[in-house]
Length: 320
Image 1 (cartoon, rainbow, N blue to C red):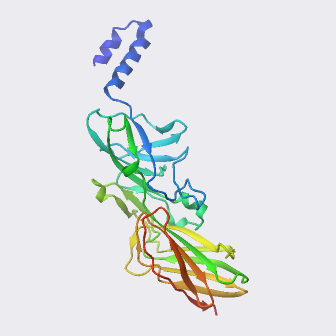
Image 2 (cartoon, rainbow, N blue to C red):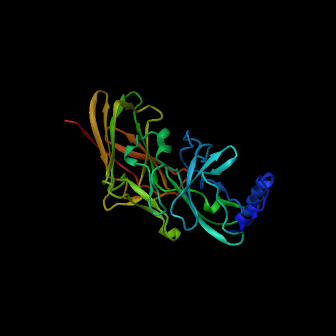
Image 3 (cartoon, rainbow, N blue to C red):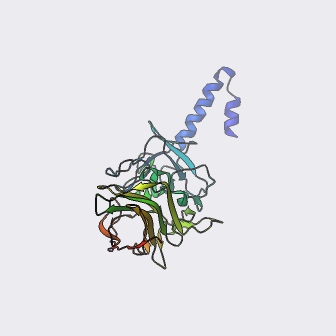
C-alpha cells in the first residue's frame, strides 16, 4: 500500500526514477544470494575424460538443483563464465541467521521435490568410462548465513558435493599375449543393484539417501552384449566401468562373461565380488584370464573411501 501511494505522488517525468528508488530500497532490505560449489575429494564424474586424471571440477554448462529452506521445489543454477547463475533471483531472508540448504547434481527437467528427486536409469549403462558422466549423481547439504561467505551459499570443503552411487571398475586381462581373446557379453547380477531410484533430502542429514522410485520395476542385473566382440588387449586388457545403487545384499553378487579364445567359446562366472557396495566408494578389480579361470591380480582405490576386496577366482567352463 505504501508503494502505491509513493508512486502516485510522482510526476510522470520522474516515474522511472521513483521505480528505481523503490527497487534499491527493496534490495537493501534483503541481499541477493550467490553460490559456490565443488566436489569432495578426487573422484570421477561427468567432467572427467581421462581415468589417469580423476580430479573432479564443475564445468561451464553444468546445472544443479537447489532447495531454499522450507521449499519443496528446486531452483536451477547454471555454471557460466561469470560463476553460478540462478534461474530466478534469490535473496537472503535476513542477514543475521544461518539457514540450511540442499542441492543435487545433475539437474533435470523431470518433476522433482525435496523428498523425491529422480536419479539416472542405471540399467541403461554401457560400461564405457566415457559415458560415466551420463549416470553420475551427487548431493550436498550445507548450513550458511549471509555473513558466513559474503552472501554466498557455499557447497565447498566439508559441505562439498559427494557421490551417491557406488562405482566399480572391472578389468579383464589375459595371461598369454599371443592368444586372441574377445568378450561378447558381460553380466553383473545383484538384487536391486540397477533398479530405478530417487533421492530424498530428509529433515536431517541422517535421513538423506536413496529410495526406490515409485512404480519402478526391479532391475537385478545389468547385461552388456556386444555386436562386435570387445578385444582383450595384451597390455591393457578390457575394462568395464559401472555404477550401482549402494547396497548390502543378502546373497553375493555374480559377475560373468562370455568370450572366445582362439576360436573356442567359453563362459566364466564368479560370486566373489561380495555383498556390500557402499555409497561413494570406487572399487577397481583387475582379473587375469588363464586356462584355469579368472583370478584377481590387483585392486586399487582412486579418490573414494577405501574398501578391502578379497581375492577372486573364476571357474572356467567351455560352452557345449
